Length: 409
Ligand code: MLT
Image (tube, rainbow, N blue to C red):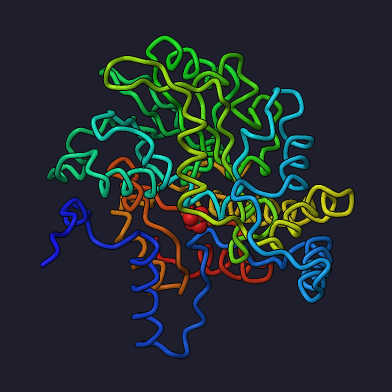
């Protein structure tokens, strides 16, 4: 009989968004007439930009003719997309085409990247955190068991709470891999250039690597928040960046993202020899992935056309107006909240210090609104709750009205 990977048994319950979906489905089944509004999982509701649709239609037609049909493409992505990514997002940072790897999204990339690192690397994650960083390291065996305090042994947790302005302190014990997400999921808060510089300098000094998730960078509105970690001098030696078209341009169902892995980012062998990580990831990517579909990559490239850019911006403006509506509505009833300025997430403090899963149940039962309990993102998320601005306008307004007028707090 096959022996299982017992690291999976260390995982606490199911994936967070499966758990919230499960509880929501059970509620709906018991209350079939309830008009439940989801401000839970960060899934977009606006259709794909027209420029993307047009490009994808054209690409479908190309598939119908022997002259323009495409089979396997380059695993790393087509040059038309990679060139557009560099031209629009990395022109000033000297990123080369072979340092971009197009994929089926940042979730897979954030989960898969740990495969190129040895099992004994020590990881640091913020608390709360996007669960994929942690869970995939648990699966790989890079952590001990889950402790009674809700933390895995062997992991360095970096608390991010209202008390420290959601800015993580540098680790007190050595780590080799540091996960940072900015704008942050789930707190919706950001690091300024100066604050991120501290991390890049730390990584340089301690030979650590920063795994920088910038999936929400398109939502940044304030000037002192870096759009990419490569704005910070020295980051090209210590950082890997994850980007996604999901939240930028509505590709949550269409799937496309990419990694930026400069050839200057190094790890070492057990004997101490320095090696570039880029060829390792290239090897992994070409072996395990056959490339994002041509049609999808054509759609993604259209985001960078003048029309595409305008359409993307208008969807982002739409969601950020939702964020304003949520933020102001919540604040008006005396609930403290964060985020929602450079990010589509609003992170609120639960009223009366209610446990976040209790608040989830209360919100669902009393006003039929689904959100995400902070505790699902880590022990420091307890007492917090996340709402997303990705709903449609009318439902967002309705949800805020219900919270303001019907929730008993
Ligand atoms: C979220 O709600 O945090 C996101 O939808 C998760 C994801 O992007 O995978």
